Length: 150
Image (tube, rainbow, N blue to C red; front, side, top):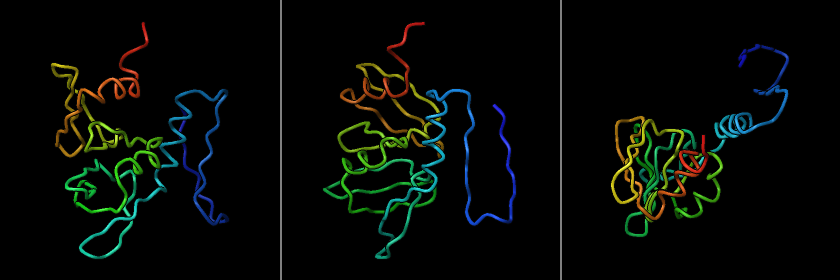
């Protein structure tokens, strides 16, 4: 893959073009990842509204009917329930891993399978989160860890 940056003072905004002989899973995934950099989630930070980039989100958790958003350096609250976060941003890596949690797969470094069809996800900030049995198969399919015979 060839990657280059071209500076052009004559343009008004950043533009990314992916040139490929054929659109495949890699180019589609790359497109979604780049597109995800411009997406934000409106959150509450001590009574002030703020914009959190989707790419910065490690995971979102529902506790006592409140939804919390965790990044590397801060925690926020959002009015959106987990199912809406998953619906709106699922194609950008935010995936349900338990009834009370959505994780950003783009910030997962390692996966450790556990007994009883569960797993531990190691995040880029050294935290771990557990995938419940109910969501493990779906996660495995999204990551293409299973299902394809080699």
